[in-house]
Length: 110
Image (tube, rainbow, N blue to C red):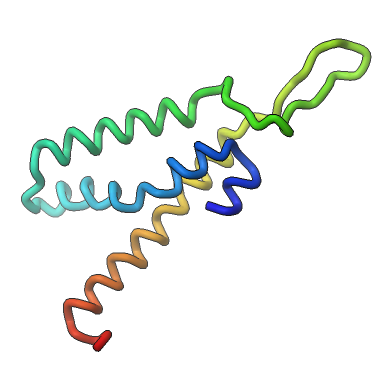
């Protein structure tokens, strides 16, 4: 999240780096576990909102503006790839919390 905050819009870093709890819903559906319909609906809403957030090409950091020499125009550095990296950072976080939960259930952390 810190790396994402330094390289992309701060709100994107916060929103996209805290989705590790949402990753479990599709995994539970694939494993044919009981998942409430509202959980499925919430997961779809979050995935849709995250997609819109990543594809928003008009959100930018103030320091990502670059003045074009000789013109009164600015161009900005897109953050699409960085947003995807921040989104992928949820996978190690999901694995950490999953393994931690299984260790707690087995009693290894007494």
